[in-house]
Length: 265
Image (tube, rainbow, N blue to C red; front, side, top):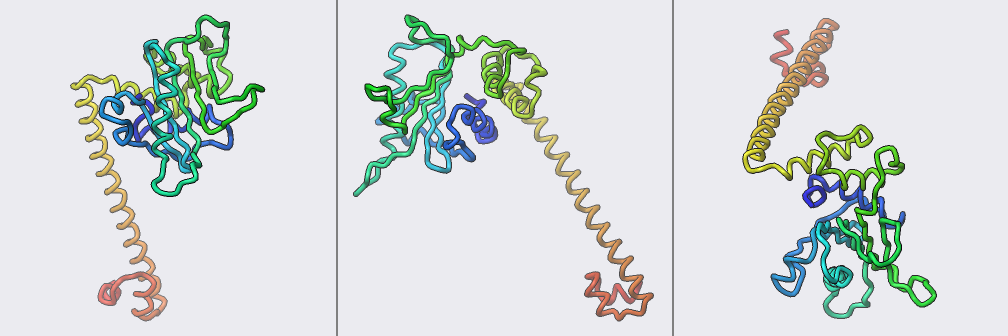
C-alpha cells in the first residue's frame, strides 16, 4: 500500500477513490488517520486495515489490498468498520450523528464463487426487504481483480486505466503508452521505489540528495542573477534621472540607491 499510503502520493489515493464515490462525496483533501489510536488492544490494532483516512467533510475511508483469500472475509470487513464508527463517539451528550464511512477493498481473489457474477465491483449497503437503502452512511466497495480482464484496447474510462494499472503493475518494465499520464507515471515510480532493496534505496536517496543540492545551487544563482539585474536597472534609471536634473532625494526614492552612490554615478 506504499502506492497510496504516503503523504507524497496522497493525490493518487484521492484520484482513485473519487472514481468510486458519488459526486456529493468527492474528495478534495485527505488526512491520514493513525491506526494506533484504534482497536481494543495491540493485536487488534495490528490487523485493522492498511489505510484509514478522512476528508475535509469528516467522511472516513478504509482502504486495503488483500492478496490471499481469507476465511470470513465479509465478517472481517464489517468488523473493520466498527473502529471508525466507535472513534466518532463523543463524551457527554451526543446525538449519535455519524459521518459516512467507506470500506474499499482491492482483492486478488473472488468471493462468493458459488453464485453467477460477472461484475468486478460490488457496492454493498444496508437495505430493507423492499431493496430500498435503509442506511446510506456505511458503504462497502469490493473490487475483485480476477474478474477484471480488460486489455489495453478495451480501456474506456479513467477507472478502467486505474484497474489495469493496479492489476498489471508488477509486470510493467516500462509504463505502457495508454497509461502515459502524469498520475500513472508517478504511481509507477512510487511502486518502483517501494520495491528497492536496501542498497538501491540508499543509492536513490544519494542521487536525490545530489539532485536537490544541484537544484539549490541553480536556484540560488538564478536569484542572485535577478538581484544583480535589479541593481543594474536601478543604476540605469538613476543615471537617466540625474542627467535630467532630478534631485538626489527623488532619485533615491525611485531607485532605492543611497545619496552617496547617486552622487558618484
